[in-house]
Image 1 (cartoon, rainbow, N blue to C red):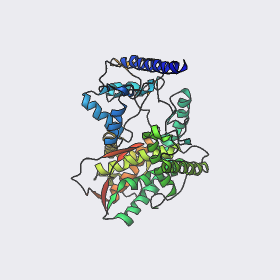
Image 2: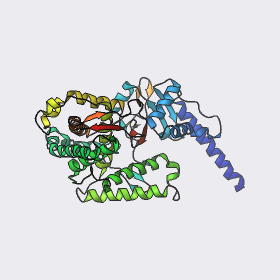
Image 3: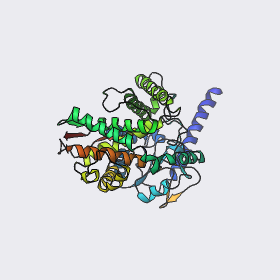
Image 4: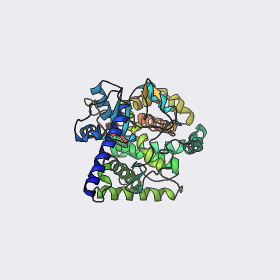
Length: 411
């Protein structure tokens, strides 16, 4: 008797799951979507399509969704990558659609930290689940954000000028001694600059990140990013003990090293180092590629270093920075989950979308102005490969150049 009951229950469960999936997917039938496979793995939805595109495009998520949207001829479309509710995605590039999301953090929460390798990967705490970066959007997040806002007021940012000037001067000295007349891969150079500025300004952690060829903190941050991405794009196999052993070991040692280093200074999480370094570096390296000449001498005058009041005079440079961020955004995609009730924008029900504004936005722009203006004053920048106009990108937490960014510095 039992030999018939168990297969019967399995069959009924399979039918129930398929019916549940069909009913929920029907709610999105008015949206453009790729055709679903008409075979046994129908329940997986578009998972195979997304994985195939990811392998072809270096896991550049924004590029993957853009290509799918172009094939459909739509800026807003639906994807299904499983049968549970969190696997129903609406992808959109429409400004009005996205603006609705980013203006309402109480309704549209971040998806949360469950199974998110940015929070925990293989049991290793990376950024954790209670910081302002990953907190879904509760009142707890709101009050944490308000507590940190004063640190980024103008009067407090002004006190960081000396440290930023020091790092900018150190960078120029390093370029003169090591790289004058040479072609330089600037992404790596500015990664070190961004790390030093974040550590000195945010944690009062004094170290030579720029000139050292082998910095323990710099290496740990790079290994942390790489380890998290392995966990992110291999979720189906990452939990297996025999898979990705070296990456797991490196991730744990990097996270432990950074946490212990930061505890000596703040007894607090290190998420600002991990999250802030990469986005600051993206701004610096991309803007150097876009702009080669700028009249900053009249702002400097006879001064060796800029003062806080001078930053507002660098209007053209700020416009170049913002245009660079538009063309090469460090974070190309993010998600939201409708927490309270069904919402409609342009007759579209929205379960996901939109980012929260970076708390360190003004800090990053200030840093970019300081470093770039100093470099432009000290060097003539030459693009050694002017015929290479297309910049291939990969995603390692943030979008970054696949083959680097090369500039020739001439004193």
